[in-house]
Length: 373
Image 1 (cartoon, rainbow, N blue to C red):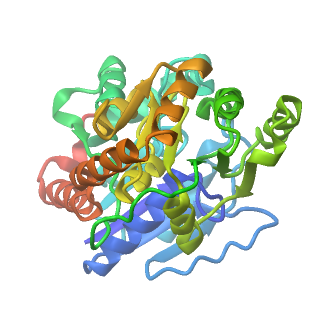
Image 2: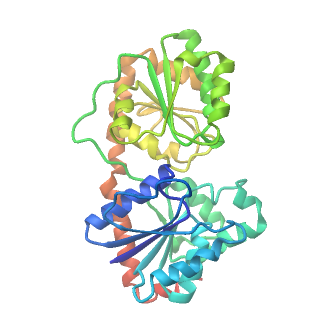
Image 3: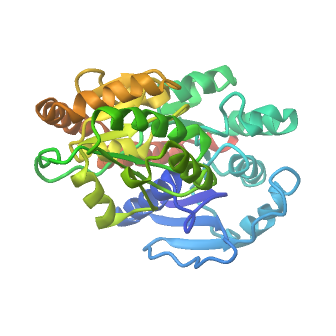
């Protein structure tokens, strides 16, 4: 099949959604599909990506509010005479909005996979009536809308997406060949993600200051980059915990594997979390999880088995949960093995299978081109 992936955010911008798109396109190419990714050109950065799929860059529109469809003409030109059998838009707005317009003209079956923030209440799209209407219109025009988990599926139902068009496909993770190693001897804590307010790293820092009062040898690493980094660095200084906290930036490949291997506990302190790839990776590495009781965290892990769930915005509760696992290495090992077994439910190959099945279904359906829009 010819598969088109259309996105408004891609490498070299590094995040869970961008990495998942890149890896999914690669896996589908390995399975014999012709995959093309259309992604914006990032100014001032090296836009080259080592990949077997085709990557086509377009000029980023002048405004997501007023210029979202400026890219549509480029998409028509680049697919002239060779349209994809299925167009998969990564993001409900603006990508899905552009994809819905493309479908109306070409009849190409359309899949939209919201990222989370593009559909959640209170986010910038939801607060703007015009953008909210565009986002909802795109979802209703799609032949299939993919939710990463039940929490996002519930939101999509509230937006009017009918049951026959809604698919739940969890994010996937590549599993280890064998059992993971034991938890680290050192009382080390790891968190990974974009340094944004929704990730709750400010709450984690307040919790970790409490952890250090009981366990001065503890160390915290927060890997990632984002607009909150300067504020988080200032918070570390204000709390007086600079010797115990590290910000290594974005980590990938062997560097990420090394961080996971050295961690005793992985923490997700998010205020909102659709379905975090970083947490899945930690589970696959056999690390016990301390996570807030929000969104996909509740589906992903089992409380008191593969980790501990705590309420969001509760640094005291977060600190107590972290300390339980730092002070009891055997408990951490048992929960880590349970997390590793739980990760098998979310295998990467299983996720790719489900996407491939969906694409084949839409490409072969005689009425799919008409969609619901």
